[in-house]
Length: 139
Image (cartoon, rainbow, N blue to C red):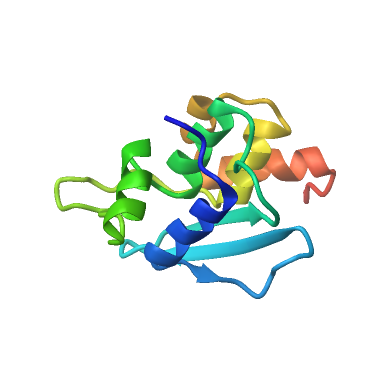
């Protein structure tokens, strides 16, 4: 499947009930969505035209972790049907502690951890790694 255009990602957020936050910047639109289970998803869309990104692996992480979808098909289905994605179906058991998207992205992109390694961490352990890296570890 093709990587969507920025305008398509913005349209997805609108159709899926995302809130555009006031934390916009000159180069990005920022969105937030609170799920029924209390988790908060966050994503951002670069301003301008063109594809969301130029890397299929990055797009895969965006729809999976930032948009909280089970498949890329769900993204396109929302655009086609104009109905929000179905998340948190009764058969889905809640997982462990959810990490904030920024922390997950930090551990993967800055520390170079694999997604599986990050998902295996508790929220406390993930934050400890972050604090160690930025040099603000409290003792």
